[in-house]
Image (tube, rainbow, N blue to C red; front, side, top):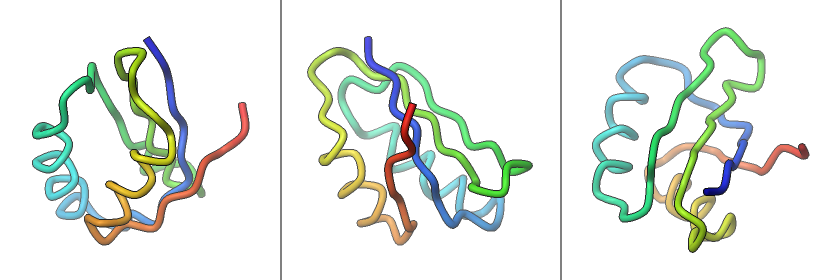
Length: 72
Protein backbone atom coordinates (compact mmCIF):
# COMPACT_ATOMS: atom_id res chain seq x y z
CA UNK A 1 0.00 0.00 0.00
CA UNK A 2 1.01 3.59 -0.63
CA UNK A 3 -0.01 6.76 1.20
CA UNK A 4 -0.23 10.04 -0.69
CA UNK A 5 -0.66 13.41 1.00
CA UNK A 6 -1.81 16.49 -0.91
CA UNK A 7 -2.48 20.16 -0.24
CA UNK A 8 -5.88 21.17 -1.65
CA UNK A 9 -8.21 24.15 -1.81
CA UNK A 10 -11.31 22.26 -0.67
CA UNK A 11 -13.63 24.73 1.06
CA UNK A 12 -16.86 22.90 1.75
CA UNK A 13 -18.45 19.58 2.56
CA UNK A 14 -20.19 19.75 -0.81
CA UNK A 15 -16.81 19.69 -2.53
CA UNK A 16 -15.83 16.71 -0.38
CA UNK A 17 -19.01 14.90 -1.44
CA UNK A 18 -18.30 15.53 -5.10
CA UNK A 19 -14.73 14.31 -4.70
CA UNK A 20 -15.95 11.27 -2.73
CA UNK A 21 -18.21 10.22 -5.59
CA UNK A 22 -15.36 10.52 -8.03
CA UNK A 23 -12.85 8.66 -5.84
CA UNK A 24 -15.29 5.76 -5.40
CA UNK A 25 -14.96 5.16 -9.12
CA UNK A 26 -11.18 4.75 -9.02
CA UNK A 27 -9.67 1.31 -8.82
CA UNK A 28 -7.10 0.76 -6.10
CA UNK A 29 -8.26 3.37 -3.58
CA UNK A 30 -8.30 1.74 -0.14
CA UNK A 31 -9.38 4.82 1.84
CA UNK A 32 -9.08 8.59 1.82
CA UNK A 33 -9.76 11.58 4.06
CA UNK A 34 -9.74 15.37 4.04
CA UNK A 35 -8.63 17.35 7.08
CA UNK A 36 -10.81 20.48 6.94
CA UNK A 37 -9.18 21.82 10.12
CA UNK A 38 -5.71 21.95 8.56
CA UNK A 39 -4.79 25.19 6.78
CA UNK A 40 -3.69 23.10 3.76
CA UNK A 41 -6.98 21.15 3.63
CA UNK A 42 -4.91 17.98 3.51
CA UNK A 43 -6.21 15.16 1.33
CA UNK A 44 -4.76 11.79 2.31
CA UNK A 45 -5.24 8.87 -0.07
CA UNK A 46 -4.24 5.28 0.70
CA UNK A 47 -3.93 3.11 -2.40
CA UNK A 48 -2.73 -0.24 -3.59
CA UNK A 49 0.89 -0.30 -4.73
CA UNK A 50 0.21 0.34 -8.43
CA UNK A 51 -1.01 3.95 -7.97
CA UNK A 52 1.03 6.89 -9.25
CA UNK A 53 1.09 10.28 -7.58
CA UNK A 54 0.94 12.23 -10.86
CA UNK A 55 -2.21 10.38 -11.92
CA UNK A 56 -3.92 11.10 -8.59
CA UNK A 57 -3.02 14.80 -8.81
CA UNK A 58 -4.40 14.99 -12.36
CA UNK A 59 -7.57 13.18 -11.33
CA UNK A 60 -8.24 15.42 -8.33
CA UNK A 61 -7.58 18.52 -10.46
CA UNK A 62 -10.04 17.21 -13.06
CA UNK A 63 -12.68 17.36 -10.30
CA UNK A 64 -12.09 21.10 -9.91
CA UNK A 65 -9.89 20.87 -6.82
CA UNK A 66 -6.42 22.42 -6.63
CA UNK A 67 -4.02 19.65 -5.63
CA UNK A 68 -0.28 19.50 -5.01
CA UNK A 69 1.91 16.96 -3.30
CA UNK A 70 3.09 17.61 0.24
CA UNK A 71 6.51 16.28 1.24
CA UNK A 72 6.68 13.48 3.81
